[in-house]
Image (cartoon, rainbow, N blue to C red; front, side, top):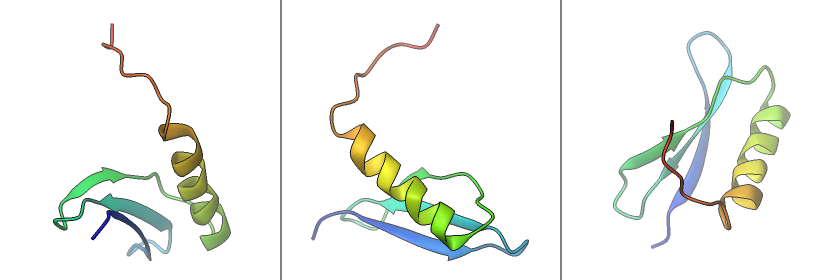
Length: 59
C-alpha cells in the first residue's frame, strides 16, 4: 500500500493535512489552512514540488 495524504479539521476549525507512510506512520504535516480548498491546494503543492526536490543541509 502506498503512502497517503489525510486532511482533517482541527479543534480550532482550521484545515490541516498529514502525509502517512505505507506503515501508517506520520512523516509530514502541513500548516493550518482557513478552508478545505486551501488545504487541498497545499497537498497538491507538496505532491508537485517534492518529487524532484533537492536534499540540502540547513545552515
